[in-house]
Length: 109
Image (cartoon, rainbow, N blue to C red; front, side, top):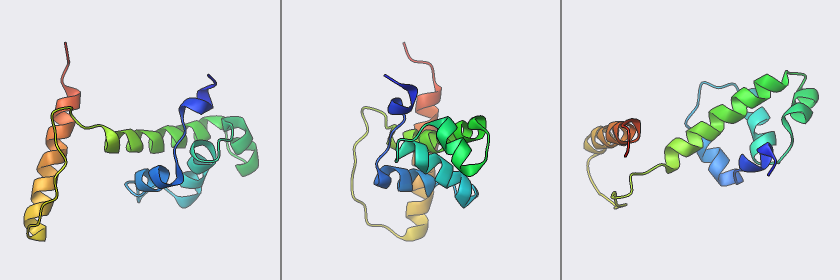
């Protein structure tokens, strides 16, 4: 399997991942979209945008990592709809994210 085939996202997955990175320049997000959604090669996108292949790879990896962080959920966790005051829910979601990161940061047997 070619490397770029391992790194593919749908437009919806890409948009969700990219939305978590508001500080990344739109042009750099587009570099990643060309590879992840449109299936172009790193060198091809680099030539089209006039940037180094390594820059394209960097932003591809950055967006793909954001995508993985969204889909990585501990196996025993459940999905549930909750109605609560916004401030309370924001605090809860922050705690959930901290716990999720802690779970995936610990060594597993």
